[in-house]
Image 1: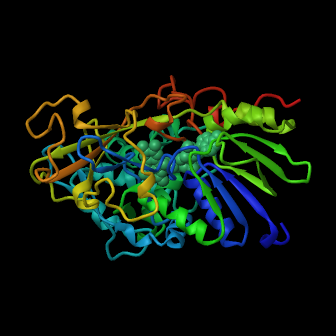
Image 2: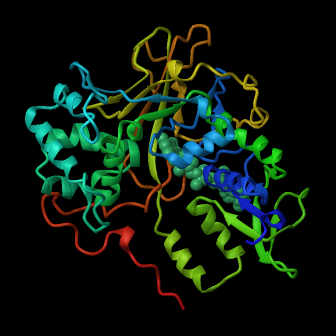
Image 3: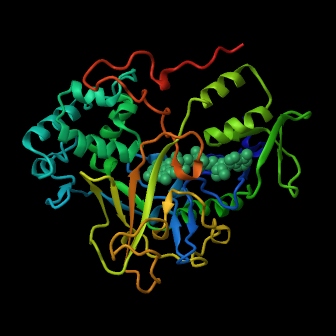
Length: 440
Ligand SMILES: Cc1cc2nc3c(=O)[nH]c(=O)nc-3n(C[C@H](O)[C@H](O)[C@H](O)COP(=O)(O)OP(=O)(O)OC[C@H]3O[C@@H](n4cnc5c(N)ncnc54)[C@H](O)[C@@H]3O)c2cc1C
């Protein structure tokens, strides 16, 4: 586009991708119109008001690492980077065992976590040697993307069962929310290189200290200040070539006439994209795109919010080993309680209502088993400690966007392998290598 000042772009979808695209374009001088179907920005990275307490609760925990430089750049632009708290200390807990703390020490990268690993009681010497051998394979660079799944790779590289269960698996499940036999070696290696090998800064973890809707709601003011528009409750229904050149975007919002623009960006989840595809101009690539979209599936995760009437831990977060829960986030320490109407940002007026999503199960929807687990959230004054526990469900599902984390990388990596993990990789290409249907 030659002269950004005279160009307009319609961005469809006000999730993280649409927000990032819209802000980058507005910064470069384009006039942007961001269209979002829901009454708030943020998409899957959003918050809602808990009906029992009035507290604003995130749609599950969202974290980033120092290596997520584009996201950090977006936070900087939006003026919310100070709302990210950084941690380079990770605590691995086993039931009844002493904690293992992994953190950078005095050695230079890629050996900065070595001393902490050597001291960690969660691993035997044999486990530690196996982990060191495995990590060292990724030091020279990323392996190519092949059909081999990561569980197979781990066995091929002599990893002990405990090293797999207590190190490789918890890290990867947290980062990619997938089982090891459904993750490609290339993407697994990327996680470990960036989290443990590149530098202490690359691997540190950032956790928002404000609700997600506040974090991403800042985009509304940012875009409007740059002469761009944001329309909420505006679902795009079709896009067609304009007789005057460019594109005409039609929405279901009666207050918004068809929007002309020089370019359109679709920043949608795979199923929203598939739903819109028939209403887009058809071309030889449409069929291939449709076939590609049909290969994606969601990988569900459950976030369990628990309110306690006393402090139950002084840790901000921890990796939980040898249990069915993978992570604990101490929300009362990480994010001071926000109540409906408290946040003074442009997003507060459009905060989402409580979802029907099973993603965030309130205590009232989980079965109380001990007195410390309330059957309904205690009143705000009595609630001293609020934990969020994350548990991967392990069942791929095709269409339930509110309850799931999306396939952030090429979709499911490898078939749910029926081959023994120590045997050959499964025959035939894994789904992420499958070819789209023939294009006519
Ligand atoms: C429980 C959970 C935990 C996660 N944890 C992490 C984490 O820790 N770290 C991390 O990096 N990522 C995490 N993710 C992933 C992250 O949330 C997503 O990758 C990211 O939010 C996807 O953003 P997106 O813009 O691509 O899609 P979406 O968020 O799905 O945004 C698409 C938007 O398009 C809108 N839309 C759909 N159809 C239309 C239409 N026709 N017209 C207009 N608008 C439309 C939707 O309403 C939606 O707002 C997590 C996700 C979940 C669900």
